[in-house]
Amino acid sequence: MKIKVVSPNAERTEQLVKMVRASDTNLDVLSATSPMSTLSAAINGSRPSLLVLDGVDGPGLDDIGRYTLKHPEVEAIVISSEQSPAFLLKAMQTGVREVLPSALDARTMEAAVQRVTRKRSQAAAPAELGKVMAFMACKGGSGASFVAANVAHALSLRDGRTVALIDLDLQFGDSLLMLSDQAPTSHVADVASHISRLDSQLLRAAMVQISGTLSVLASPDELTQALEVQPEHVEAIIKQAQQMFDYVVIDLGRSINAVSLRALDMATHVFPVLQMNLPNVRDAKRLQALFKSLDYAPQKIHWLVNRYQKGGDITLDSLQQTLGGAQVATIPNHFNAVSASVNQGVPIGKMARNNPVTRALLNLCSTVSPMQQVKKDSWLNTMFGNA
Ligand SMILES: Nc1ncnc2c1ncn2[C@@H]1O[C@H](COP(=O)(O)OP(=O)(O)OP(=O)(O)O)[C@@H](O)[C@H]1O
Ligand SMILES: [Mg+2]
Image 1 (cartoon, helix red, strand yellow):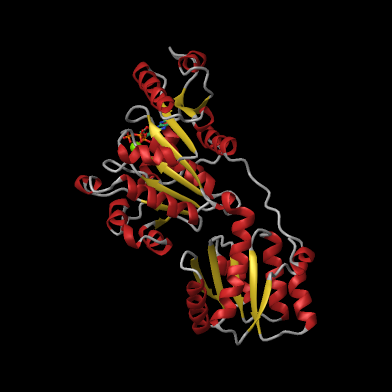
Image 2 (tube, protein in one colour):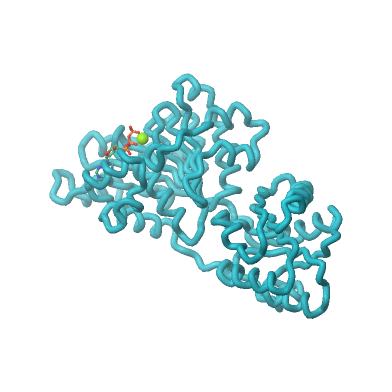
Protein backbone atom coordinates (compact mmCIF):
# COMPACT_ATOMS: atom_id res chain seq x y z
CA MET A 1 0.00 0.00 0.00
CA LYS A 2 1.27 3.44 -0.91
CA ILE A 3 1.23 6.14 1.77
CA LYS A 4 2.19 9.78 1.37
CA VAL A 5 3.20 11.88 4.36
CA VAL A 6 2.80 15.63 3.91
CA SER A 7 3.81 18.23 6.49
CA PRO A 8 4.63 21.93 6.14
CA ASN A 9 7.73 21.32 8.25
CA ALA A 10 10.66 19.32 6.80
CA GLU A 11 11.79 17.97 10.16
CA ARG A 12 8.28 16.75 11.04
CA THR A 13 7.99 15.16 7.60
CA GLU A 14 11.10 13.13 8.30
CA GLN A 15 9.95 12.11 11.81
CA LEU A 16 6.51 11.08 10.59
CA VAL A 17 7.91 9.07 7.68
CA LYS A 18 10.05 7.12 10.15
CA MET A 19 7.02 6.46 12.36
CA VAL A 20 4.85 5.30 9.45
CA ARG A 21 7.63 3.06 8.09
CA ALA A 22 8.11 1.52 11.53
CA SER A 23 4.41 0.66 11.71
CA ASP A 24 4.67 -1.79 8.78
CA THR A 25 7.75 -2.53 6.69
CA ASN A 26 5.67 -3.52 3.65
CA LEU A 27 4.35 -0.01 3.16
CA ASP A 28 5.59 2.15 0.32
CA VAL A 29 6.06 5.48 2.10
CA LEU A 30 6.51 8.68 0.08
CA SER A 31 6.77 12.19 1.49
CA ALA A 32 6.57 15.87 0.66
CA THR A 33 7.06 19.05 2.64
CA SER A 34 4.22 21.37 1.75
CA PRO A 35 1.32 23.34 3.24
CA MET A 36 -2.18 21.91 2.70
CA SER A 37 -2.94 24.74 0.26
CA THR A 38 -0.64 23.08 -2.30
CA LEU A 39 -1.63 19.50 -1.48
CA SER A 40 -2.42 18.50 -5.07
CA ALA A 41 1.00 19.64 -6.25
CA ALA A 42 2.67 17.89 -3.31
CA ILE A 43 0.93 14.62 -4.18
CA ASN A 44 1.90 15.20 -7.80
CA GLY A 45 0.39 12.15 -9.44
CA SER A 46 1.98 9.69 -7.00
CA ARG A 47 -1.49 8.22 -6.29
CA PRO A 48 -1.23 7.11 -2.70
CA SER A 49 -3.98 5.06 -1.04
CA LEU A 50 -3.48 6.86 2.28
CA LEU A 51 -2.42 10.41 3.10
CA VAL A 52 -0.92 11.27 6.48
CA LEU A 53 -1.33 15.04 6.71
CA ASP A 54 0.36 17.05 9.43
CA GLY A 55 -0.15 20.56 10.78
CA VAL A 56 -3.75 20.80 9.60
CA ASP A 57 -5.99 23.68 10.72
CA GLY A 58 -9.54 24.68 9.70
CA PRO A 59 -8.63 26.14 6.28
CA GLY A 60 -6.31 23.13 5.81
CA LEU A 61 -9.37 20.87 6.13
CA ASP A 62 -11.02 22.79 3.27
CA ASP A 63 -7.93 22.15 1.12
CA ILE A 64 -8.04 18.46 2.01
CA GLY A 65 -11.77 18.36 1.24
CA ARG A 66 -11.14 19.77 -2.24
CA TYR A 67 -8.56 17.02 -2.85
CA THR A 68 -10.62 14.12 -1.48
CA LEU A 69 -13.66 15.26 -3.48
CA LYS A 70 -11.64 14.73 -6.66
CA HIS A 71 -9.96 11.56 -5.33
CA PRO A 72 -12.61 9.78 -3.28
CA GLU A 73 -10.57 6.54 -3.23
CA VAL A 74 -7.83 8.15 -1.09
CA GLU A 75 -8.01 7.84 2.71
CA ALA A 76 -6.64 10.60 4.96
CA ILE A 77 -5.30 10.66 8.50
CA VAL A 78 -4.95 14.19 9.82
CA ILE A 79 -2.55 15.31 12.56
CA SER A 80 -3.61 18.53 14.27
CA SER A 81 -3.24 20.50 17.49
CA GLU A 82 -6.94 21.31 17.11
CA GLN A 83 -9.19 18.72 18.72
CA SER A 84 -12.42 20.68 19.27
CA PRO A 85 -15.70 18.84 18.51
CA ALA A 86 -16.40 21.33 15.68
CA PHE A 87 -13.02 20.59 14.09
CA LEU A 88 -13.47 16.82 14.47
CA LEU A 89 -16.94 16.96 12.92
CA LYS A 90 -15.68 19.05 10.00
CA ALA A 91 -12.79 16.58 9.52
CA MET A 92 -15.24 13.67 9.34
CA GLN A 93 -17.46 15.58 6.91
CA THR A 94 -14.38 16.16 4.77
CA GLY A 95 -13.90 12.39 4.56
CA VAL A 96 -10.93 12.25 6.93
CA ARG A 97 -10.68 8.82 8.55
CA GLU A 98 -8.86 9.77 11.78
CA VAL A 99 -7.65 12.91 13.56
CA LEU A 100 -4.53 12.41 15.68
CA PRO A 101 -3.03 14.91 18.14
CA SER A 102 0.15 16.80 17.18
CA ALA A 103 2.07 15.36 20.10
CA LEU A 104 1.62 11.80 18.98
CA ASP A 105 3.75 8.79 19.79
CA ALA A 106 4.81 5.96 17.53
CA ARG A 107 2.23 3.58 18.95
CA THR A 108 -0.72 5.91 18.18
CA MET A 109 0.52 6.36 14.64
CA GLU A 110 1.05 2.63 14.20
CA ALA A 111 -2.47 1.82 15.42
CA ALA A 112 -4.07 4.43 13.13
CA VAL A 113 -2.14 3.31 10.04
CA GLN A 114 -2.91 -0.33 10.77
CA ARG A 115 -6.63 0.38 11.13
CA VAL A 116 -6.65 1.81 7.62
CA THR A 117 -4.40 -0.84 6.06
CA ARG A 118 -6.36 -3.69 7.67
CA LYS A 119 -9.63 -2.24 6.48
CA ARG A 120 -8.37 -1.76 2.93
CA SER A 121 -6.80 -5.18 2.75
CA GLN A 122 -10.08 -6.77 3.90
CA ALA A 123 -12.19 -4.68 1.56
CA ALA A 124 -10.02 -4.54 -1.52
CA ALA A 125 -7.14 -6.96 -1.37
CA PRO A 126 -7.62 -8.53 -4.81
CA ALA A 127 -8.47 -5.22 -6.49
CA GLU A 128 -5.34 -3.59 -5.13
CA LEU A 129 -2.83 -5.89 -6.80
CA GLY A 130 -1.75 -4.49 -10.16
CA LYS A 131 -2.87 -6.24 -13.32
CA VAL A 132 -0.04 -7.86 -15.23
CA MET A 133 -0.11 -7.44 -19.02
CA ALA A 134 2.55 -9.39 -20.90
CA PHE A 135 3.36 -8.64 -24.56
CA MET A 136 5.33 -11.07 -26.68
CA ALA A 137 6.32 -11.15 -30.33
CA CYS A 138 5.33 -14.14 -32.46
CA LYS A 139 8.33 -13.25 -34.67
CA GLY A 140 11.07 -10.67 -34.27
CA GLY A 141 10.06 -7.22 -35.36
CA SER A 142 6.29 -7.79 -34.98
CA GLY A 143 6.04 -4.61 -32.91
CA ALA A 144 5.69 -6.13 -29.42
CA SER A 145 7.99 -3.54 -27.82
CA PHE A 146 6.33 -0.61 -29.54
CA VAL A 147 2.88 -1.83 -28.51
CA ALA A 148 3.89 -2.71 -24.92
CA ALA A 149 5.57 0.66 -24.32
CA ASN A 150 2.71 2.64 -25.82
CA VAL A 151 -0.01 0.66 -24.02
CA ALA A 152 1.91 1.38 -20.80
CA HIS A 153 1.91 5.07 -21.66
CA ALA A 154 -1.80 5.08 -22.57
CA LEU A 155 -2.72 3.34 -19.29
CA SER A 156 -0.65 5.83 -17.29
CA LEU A 157 -2.83 8.69 -18.55
CA ARG A 158 -6.02 7.18 -17.11
CA ASP A 159 -7.27 8.96 -14.08
CA GLY A 160 -3.90 8.90 -12.33
CA ARG A 161 -3.46 5.11 -12.63
CA THR A 162 0.14 4.10 -12.07
CA VAL A 163 2.02 1.87 -14.47
CA ALA A 164 5.30 -0.05 -14.38
CA LEU A 165 6.81 -1.12 -17.69
CA ILE A 166 9.25 -3.97 -17.11
CA ASP A 167 11.55 -4.96 -19.95
CA LEU A 168 12.01 -8.72 -19.76
CA ASP A 169 13.43 -8.98 -23.26
CA LEU A 170 16.62 -9.52 -21.30
CA GLN A 171 19.09 -9.72 -24.18
CA PHE A 172 17.77 -7.22 -26.72
CA GLY A 173 15.31 -5.08 -24.76
CA ASP A 174 14.59 -1.58 -25.99
CA SER A 175 11.30 -0.64 -24.27
CA LEU A 176 12.73 2.40 -22.52
CA LEU A 177 13.98 3.83 -25.83
CA MET A 178 10.39 3.87 -27.10
CA LEU A 179 9.38 6.35 -24.40
CA SER A 180 12.38 8.41 -23.40
CA ASP A 181 16.00 9.30 -24.06
CA GLN A 182 16.87 9.04 -20.36
CA ALA A 183 19.72 6.64 -19.61
CA PRO A 184 18.79 4.01 -17.02
CA THR A 185 20.97 3.94 -13.91
CA SER A 186 19.90 0.38 -13.10
CA HIS A 187 18.12 -2.57 -14.72
CA VAL A 188 16.43 -5.95 -14.22
CA ALA A 189 19.72 -7.84 -13.68
CA ASP A 190 20.86 -5.28 -11.08
CA VAL A 191 17.62 -5.72 -9.14
CA ALA A 192 17.96 -9.53 -9.48
CA SER A 193 21.44 -9.37 -7.97
CA HIS A 194 20.01 -7.62 -4.86
CA ILE A 195 16.86 -9.74 -4.71
CA SER A 196 17.08 -10.47 -0.97
CA ARG A 197 16.82 -6.71 -0.32
CA LEU A 198 14.01 -6.12 -2.82
CA ASP A 199 11.36 -3.76 -1.51
CA SER A 200 9.40 -0.84 -2.92
CA GLN A 201 12.25 1.61 -2.38
CA LEU A 202 14.82 -0.54 -4.15
CA LEU A 203 12.51 -1.18 -7.10
CA ARG A 204 11.53 2.49 -7.37
CA ALA A 205 15.17 3.57 -7.26
CA ALA A 206 16.03 1.14 -10.07
CA MET A 207 13.33 2.50 -12.37
CA VAL A 208 13.38 5.43 -14.76
CA GLN A 209 10.51 7.83 -14.03
CA ILE A 210 8.92 8.82 -17.31
CA SER A 211 6.13 10.75 -15.57
CA GLY A 212 4.39 10.85 -12.21
CA THR A 213 2.42 7.74 -13.20
CA LEU A 214 4.78 5.83 -15.51
CA SER A 215 8.04 4.13 -14.50
CA VAL A 216 10.26 1.79 -16.49
CA LEU A 217 12.57 -0.99 -15.32
CA ALA A 218 15.02 -1.34 -18.19
CA SER A 219 16.61 -4.54 -19.49
CA PRO A 220 20.33 -5.19 -18.79
CA ASP A 221 22.86 -3.42 -21.01
CA GLU A 222 25.15 -6.42 -21.43
CA LEU A 223 24.16 -9.76 -22.86
CA THR A 224 25.99 -11.70 -20.14
CA GLN A 225 24.00 -9.97 -17.37
CA ALA A 226 20.81 -11.36 -18.87
CA LEU A 227 21.95 -14.90 -18.08
CA GLU A 228 22.07 -14.12 -14.36
CA VAL A 229 18.33 -13.40 -14.14
CA GLN A 230 16.42 -16.41 -12.81
CA PRO A 231 12.66 -17.14 -12.85
CA GLU A 232 12.40 -16.60 -9.09
CA HIS A 233 13.95 -13.13 -9.48
CA VAL A 234 11.37 -12.25 -12.10
CA GLU A 235 8.57 -13.54 -9.91
CA ALA A 236 9.72 -11.42 -6.96
CA ILE A 237 10.08 -8.31 -9.14
CA ILE A 238 6.61 -8.71 -10.67
CA LYS A 239 5.03 -9.34 -7.24
CA GLN A 240 6.71 -6.24 -5.81
CA ALA A 241 5.60 -4.15 -8.80
CA GLN A 242 2.02 -5.42 -8.45
CA GLN A 243 1.92 -4.03 -4.93
CA MET A 244 3.12 -0.62 -6.07
CA PHE A 245 1.41 -0.06 -9.44
CA ASP A 246 -2.08 -0.45 -10.87
CA TYR A 247 -0.70 -2.01 -14.06
CA VAL A 248 2.47 -3.97 -14.65
CA VAL A 249 3.19 -4.07 -18.38
CA ILE A 250 5.87 -6.52 -19.49
CA ASP A 251 7.78 -6.72 -22.75
CA LEU A 252 8.72 -10.40 -23.04
CA GLY A 253 10.50 -10.19 -26.38
CA ARG A 254 10.25 -13.37 -28.43
CA SER A 255 12.01 -16.11 -26.50
CA ILE A 256 10.26 -18.81 -24.57
CA ASN A 257 12.44 -19.84 -21.65
CA ALA A 258 12.12 -20.39 -17.91
CA VAL A 259 12.11 -16.64 -17.21
CA SER A 260 9.48 -15.70 -19.79
CA LEU A 261 7.33 -18.70 -18.81
CA ARG A 262 7.28 -17.55 -15.20
CA ALA A 263 6.15 -14.08 -16.31
CA LEU A 264 3.51 -15.60 -18.62
CA ASP A 265 2.15 -17.65 -15.73
CA MET A 266 1.84 -14.54 -13.59
CA ALA A 267 0.19 -12.45 -16.30
CA THR A 268 -3.45 -11.47 -16.04
CA HIS A 269 -3.49 -10.84 -19.80
CA VAL A 270 -1.11 -12.12 -22.47
CA PHE A 271 -0.83 -10.30 -25.82
CA PRO A 272 0.95 -12.24 -28.54
CA VAL A 273 1.76 -9.69 -31.26
CA LEU A 274 1.95 -10.82 -34.88
CA GLN A 275 1.91 -9.48 -38.39
CA MET A 276 -0.20 -10.86 -41.20
CA ASN A 277 2.26 -13.13 -43.00
CA LEU A 278 2.76 -16.85 -43.10
CA PRO A 279 5.85 -17.14 -40.85
CA ASN A 280 4.10 -15.07 -38.16
CA VAL A 281 0.88 -17.07 -38.40
CA ARG A 282 2.83 -20.34 -38.17
CA ASP A 283 4.52 -19.14 -34.97
CA ALA A 284 1.18 -17.93 -33.62
CA LYS A 285 -0.12 -21.49 -33.99
CA ARG A 286 2.90 -22.80 -32.12
CA LEU A 287 2.32 -20.32 -29.33
CA GLN A 288 -1.32 -21.24 -29.16
CA ALA A 289 -0.38 -24.89 -28.68
CA LEU A 290 1.97 -23.83 -25.89
CA PHE A 291 -0.77 -21.80 -24.13
CA LYS A 292 -3.08 -24.80 -24.39
CA SER A 293 -0.47 -27.11 -22.88
CA LEU A 294 -0.06 -24.59 -20.04
CA ASP A 295 -3.82 -24.69 -19.46
CA TYR A 296 -4.28 -20.94 -19.93
CA ALA A 297 -7.90 -19.83 -20.08
CA PRO A 298 -8.80 -18.52 -23.57
CA GLN A 299 -9.83 -15.17 -21.99
CA LYS A 300 -6.25 -14.66 -20.84
CA ILE A 301 -4.93 -14.55 -24.42
CA HIS A 302 -5.48 -11.48 -26.62
CA TRP A 303 -4.14 -11.97 -30.15
CA LEU A 304 -2.98 -8.73 -31.64
CA VAL A 305 -2.31 -8.18 -35.34
CA ASN A 306 0.04 -5.23 -35.69
CA ARG A 307 0.60 -3.25 -38.90
CA TYR A 308 -2.76 -4.50 -40.14
CA GLN A 309 -3.82 -3.51 -43.64
CA LYS A 310 -7.04 -4.62 -45.26
CA GLY A 311 -6.81 -6.64 -48.45
CA GLY A 312 -3.73 -8.70 -47.61
CA ASP A 313 -3.22 -12.36 -48.61
CA ILE A 314 -4.31 -13.57 -45.19
CA THR A 315 -7.66 -12.36 -43.90
CA LEU A 316 -8.64 -11.79 -40.28
CA ASP A 317 -11.30 -14.51 -40.64
CA SER A 318 -8.79 -17.08 -41.77
CA LEU A 319 -6.41 -16.12 -38.96
CA GLN A 320 -9.23 -16.48 -36.45
CA GLN A 321 -10.05 -19.91 -37.86
CA THR A 322 -6.40 -20.93 -37.63
CA LEU A 323 -6.44 -19.86 -33.99
CA GLY A 324 -9.51 -21.93 -33.23
CA GLY A 325 -11.98 -19.03 -33.26
CA ALA A 326 -10.04 -16.79 -30.87
CA GLN A 327 -10.75 -13.04 -30.86
CA VAL A 328 -8.17 -10.98 -32.74
CA ALA A 329 -7.62 -7.22 -32.32
CA THR A 330 -5.78 -5.08 -34.84
CA ILE A 331 -3.45 -2.09 -34.85
CA PRO A 332 -3.15 -0.37 -38.22
CA ASN A 333 0.03 0.12 -40.19
CA HIS A 334 1.25 3.71 -40.03
CA PHE A 335 4.88 3.82 -40.91
CA ASN A 336 5.57 7.56 -40.62
CA ALA A 337 3.89 8.18 -37.27
CA VAL A 338 5.28 5.00 -35.66
CA SER A 339 8.81 5.55 -36.99
CA ALA A 340 8.80 9.15 -35.76
CA SER A 341 7.65 7.99 -32.31
CA VAL A 342 10.22 5.16 -32.12
CA ASN A 343 13.12 7.21 -33.50
CA GLN A 344 12.47 10.18 -31.23
CA GLY A 345 11.65 8.06 -28.16
CA VAL A 346 8.35 9.85 -27.62
CA PRO A 347 5.08 7.92 -27.03
CA ILE A 348 2.84 8.02 -30.08
CA GLY A 349 -0.06 9.24 -27.93
CA LYS A 350 1.98 12.35 -27.18
CA MET A 351 3.15 12.96 -30.75
CA ALA A 352 0.06 12.02 -32.72
CA ARG A 353 -3.05 12.02 -30.53
CA ASN A 354 -5.48 11.38 -33.34
CA ASN A 355 -3.44 8.91 -35.29
CA PRO A 356 -5.32 5.64 -35.99
CA VAL A 357 -2.52 3.72 -34.21
CA THR A 358 -3.01 5.85 -31.07
CA ARG A 359 -6.77 5.26 -31.19
CA ALA A 360 -6.32 1.50 -31.66
CA LEU A 361 -3.99 1.39 -28.62
CA LEU A 362 -6.53 3.29 -26.50
CA ASN A 363 -9.26 0.89 -27.65
CA LEU A 364 -7.11 -2.03 -26.65
CA CYS A 365 -6.63 -0.55 -23.16
CA SER A 366 -10.35 -0.07 -22.62
CA THR A 367 -11.23 -3.54 -23.88
CA VAL A 368 -8.99 -5.32 -21.42
CA SER A 369 -9.30 -2.85 -18.60
CA PRO A 370 -12.45 -0.73 -18.57
CA MET A 371 -12.36 2.40 -16.45
CA GLN A 372 -13.69 1.77 -12.99
CA GLN A 373 -15.64 4.07 -10.73
CA VAL A 374 -14.09 4.01 -7.27
CA LYS A 375 -16.64 4.26 -4.50
CA LYS A 376 -15.83 5.73 -1.13
CA ASP A 377 -17.40 5.31 2.28
CA SER A 378 -19.68 8.12 3.34
CA TRP A 379 -18.56 10.13 6.35
CA LEU A 380 -21.50 8.76 8.33
CA ASN A 381 -20.27 5.23 7.78
CA THR A 382 -16.80 6.40 8.64
CA MET A 383 -17.98 7.96 11.91
CA PHE A 384 -19.95 4.94 12.96
CA GLY A 385 -17.21 2.58 11.91
CA ASN A 386 -19.45 0.22 9.95
CA ALA A 387 -18.25 1.05 6.45
N1 LIG B 1 1.70 -0.20 -36.25
C1 LIG B 1 2.86 0.02 -36.85
N2 LIG B 1 2.92 0.69 -38.03
C2 LIG B 1 4.08 0.88 -38.66
N3 LIG B 1 5.27 0.48 -38.21
C3 LIG B 1 5.30 -0.19 -37.05
C4 LIG B 1 4.11 -0.45 -36.30
N4 LIG B 1 4.46 -1.12 -35.17
C5 LIG B 1 5.80 -1.27 -35.21
N5 LIG B 1 6.32 -0.72 -36.35
C6 LIG B 1 7.73 -0.70 -36.76
O1 LIG B 1 8.31 -1.96 -36.48
C7 LIG B 1 9.56 -1.78 -35.83
C8 LIG B 1 9.80 -2.93 -34.89
O2 LIG B 1 8.95 -2.77 -33.75
P1 LIG B 1 9.36 -3.35 -32.33
O3 LIG B 1 10.77 -3.03 -32.01
O4 LIG B 1 8.31 -2.91 -31.41
O5 LIG B 1 9.22 -4.91 -32.63
P2 LIG B 1 9.55 -6.12 -31.66
O6 LIG B 1 8.54 -7.17 -31.93
O7 LIG B 1 9.70 -5.65 -30.29
O8 LIG B 1 10.97 -6.55 -32.24
P3 LIG B 1 12.18 -7.34 -31.53
O9 LIG B 1 11.97 -8.75 -31.95
O10 LIG B 1 13.40 -6.73 -32.13
O11 LIG B 1 12.07 -7.13 -30.06
C9 LIG B 1 9.45 -0.43 -35.14
O12 LIG B 1 10.71 0.19 -35.06
C10 LIG B 1 8.53 0.36 -36.02
O13 LIG B 1 9.28 1.10 -36.94
MG1 LIG C 1 11.27 -5.81 -28.92
